[in-house]
Length: 199
Ligand SMILES: C[S@@+](CC[C@H](N)C(=O)[O-])C[C@H]1O[C@@H](n2cnc3c(N)ncnc32)[C@H](O)[C@@H]1O
Image 1 (cartoon, rainbow, N blue to C red):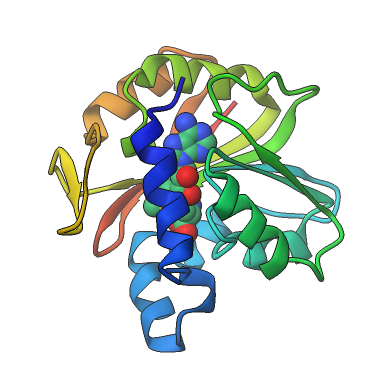
Image 2: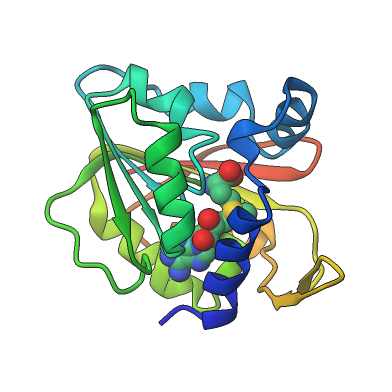
């Protein structure tokens, strides 16, 4: 069960018109310091692949993925964020939006690619999340994860402070290696580590 303060925080960001999808190009370039073109290339997208984004947000990354896959499922726990993502991505008819906690939602079927950026720090029970990803990933599937280098235990925006659970490269790698996935590549961006795993 996701913390209500997390849902509230992301709902409020939409009310505050904080939407990275609609940022001017210079700010979009800044946000790509957590993922960027190499993150998307690592997904090895093709028009036959089924893709899942965990924490789709307002669609900043999904807009670059949807045109290159068969279909994209985006899950996000914040109702206002999902509503905004639907508006932002309305031209992409191959996207399914789910408003729920990733940990709680019962998916039907598996995915060829699973990716997530700037979201893992919200999960307290990381082993449970990585295990679920492993069960949702098809054989030969690819899991691309961006973890924030920031080790602060709070997102502090002045008017509110949200508890997060920072990730370390070693911890995430060992959780992945304890599943049927193996780590195939790790690289660094300015603000994140990108871990690419294959099953
Ligand atoms: C910092 S935003 C990143 C959004 C997007 N990945 C991006 O990089 O633009 C984190 C997102 O994760 C979502 N989130 C947090 N905890 C979640 C959970 N347990 N299940 C699904 N989504 C979650 C939040 O609502 C928020 O939209």
